[in-house]
Image (cartoon, rainbow over all chains, first blue to last red; front, side):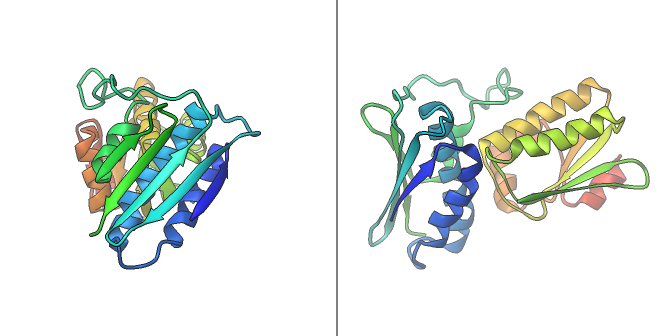
Length: 131
Length: 111
C-alpha cells in the first residue's frame, strides 16, 4: 500500500484510518492495530508534516506499508532536511514532564517493535511484529 | 473525532473526546477549554471513555491546559482512560502529573 499524504496536520487522522482500515486481518491483533499502530503512525506523520515539510501545502509525505508473513513495516518519508534522533532529552525526566513537546519518538519506540531512521533522517520505518 | 462540551450543575465543565486526540485536532480541544476558562469556568474534566488513541501532541496539549488552568486557580481532571491509554500515561510518567479517575462521575465527585 502506498499513500501520499498532503502536508496538512488535519489530514493525519484520515491517513491513519486509511492505513489501519486497509491492513488485512491476521498479522496484527485488532488491539495493536487500534492503538499501537494508529498512535505510532499518527506520531510519524505529525512529525514529518510539522518538521519535515513544514506544513507547506505544496508538499507531501509518502507512506508505504510493507506486509510480511508475520510483520508489518510502515515507512514514512518526507522531503525535508532530516532529523538527528541521537540526542534527545528524556521526556520522563522530572525537569521535562511539563513540556508540551518532545514525547513523540519516545512514544513510538514504546509502542512498536522497532523504529529506524534512514541515513538522511527524513524517513522513518516503524516495525510491528505479529501479535 | 469530536469534542462534546457540557457544564454540570455544579459548574464543572466536562469535555468528552470522541475518536482520538492527536496533532490534527488538539488545537480545537485547547480552544474549547480556553474559551470556557475565559468565561470563568475553573473546574474541568476531560472524559476519554470514547477515545481510541492519543498521540504525543494530544498529551502535550493536556499538559499545557493543565498548567493554564492551574495558573487561573482551577483544576483539570482526566477520566475514562482505557487500559492502553492508562499505559501511555504511565510510560510517559504523565500519570504523576494528572488526577486520573476511572469515570467522569468519580472525577465529578472528587471536586
